[in-house]
Image (cartoon, rainbow, N blue to C red; front, top):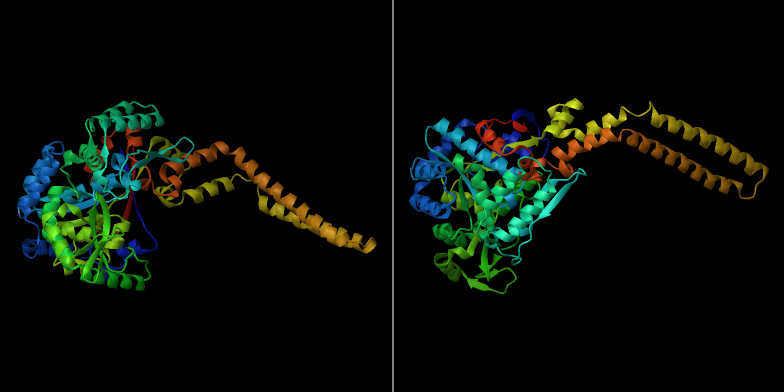
Length: 548
């Protein structure tokens, strides 16, 4: 494995302002991440202000131990749980939905970023810093996680979906996988991938991870632990009943402060729009920013005066009833995109939160919501962005003499330039000249015949001219198509490269899954990436190319 890194500019948008505009960061976030003083300020807050406001640390560790046992407890994870008991220990946290076989590659990249920042922070502070990965098991959008995308021989990405029965709004953690259906799906996936020496390796390993019926999120956790357990990454499912019990007091506070939280977020959203950015979250009147389970399905809570309503179910609650439920049945509650970060801060002593561009956008409207809950937003850092370069893609990059910046943002432009260089000289101008000459001759002939014959010669000449010119346009299109056919082999090589690194014109890490790379090259490159330190506190947005 080799690593090539470039500094890139996002250009415009909120994420660019987050990286480049200090005034913007100070307006929407609690800390300026690029100032080293922010770390000392954050540590001081965690040491002095947070302890009396947070979940009991020992009870948190007990809940984590209960969730992780027995098979998610690599010795490195157990060691980190012991270190988390230390009141001096801090956390770097990031999370993601429970995608199938880990989901898109950015899930892997985020976990690596979390691990690297924990290691880097521990070196800087000389105190324990634990990497934690938050699994969004409470989410109920199953269609977002029930498939993977793989590269297709025709240079198109292919969706491979695992069908599992369930209710439309049930949390992802409530879906149950059986070994039979999962093994069958894995076999069908294997048949879609080329035969390589590592195919049996990944297929056998994935089958081993589900030898009995499992929840969807437990299978995800086993996959992630298989990749990162040795690095001490502590996993937690947000829907874990043991964690819910620990969250009970905070749910009660979220219920009581619901109107104020919504007000803070709405005001910050308006402020963000005044900066010229769209609202990162759709807000509805009276939304409580909490969900409740009704007959196993997850519905948003809305507050209407003294009455709370669960979506369109017709179920209504008084505040006293909700507070009682939060105390006696906290597993029925779950957070939304606004309250989830608050709950993380209540549970964990977070030094850094690692997020993608979308997460960084909606965290920008949460600073006053944290303060309403007597908490402080942690330092927000972007996850590292990576593109995997397989050996064929590397060959194409070298064949076409491309720079890494070309690969990052100019592939379509470079492809068009390559084809343009292979066209006959001045092809467009030659056709234009021919078209103008023929048009002039045709109009002169039409004028002569209209004068000599009369009748409807001028009208007929005009219609005939349109057909003649249309034939020239057709001939021009045919010539261009013939050029593309002549250079078809080269264009296919360009398309292979684009499909590899920018599938469907999207960043690779947002589309493809890790399995197709494991199939080709094994999985040791993940460990090599974790060991290769590439995080740093500066304003530069880096993009890393991992040459496998």
